[in-house]
Image (cartoon, rainbow over all chains, first blue to last red; front, top):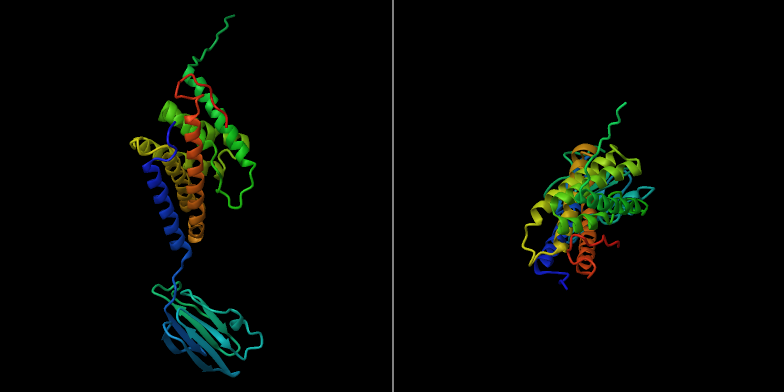
Length: 122
Length: 183
């Protein structure tokens, strides 16, 4: 009777598992952002780190947009836009993600080590 | 009037390869009926036969069985020379190349499970390489890589264990005349 799993088999299985995990992290992990860029009417009003908690208030043509920044994530907390699309997007964590409050002309963008796009036109 | 009879000599090897290839083709067809959430994620049951052939009759026989399986499987599934056929060929080719190297691993430490897992990774690697350069030369595939790799690992390991069991079964003690054991 042969042993069904020999030492090398275990090694191959572990290596295969390692490969799967590496691929998963590489393909799905994405690039967690570390910087947040806030724009109003197309101009950058604030570029800040995603490291500590703070809130930023930005004024647009409709009123004030409240942006919440927490370690590793940021969101639009309040916005005067009628449809609240950017608020409903919730927390942004990945590099390249952006929440746009078009009626109020405010945008929130997450940046990481690598940028997913060279430029974005809204 | 002369009657000419062309006789093709058929050796015992030929018959054995034909029988084993038929087995592999049967498994390929059975597998094609299984629904799969992602095209390309399949148990690869025919690889059980390929691996048994490799371990009992050598690499040449395994290559023959594998080639016949891809060709006849393509014929029977109606995908001959369609993209699926070429993907299958690429997978079989890389998988056989990997096996050609991997079978020289010391068998004291590396059993059928190793061969099966390596062959499964070779199989999906060959297919994805062809897809990458020919069918979808974009980044769309990258998100699916972990799925394919995980499937290769799991199905490769399971197939390897099946092969181990079949080799350990008393009916096939490695004798050349042992009948083909059906799963």
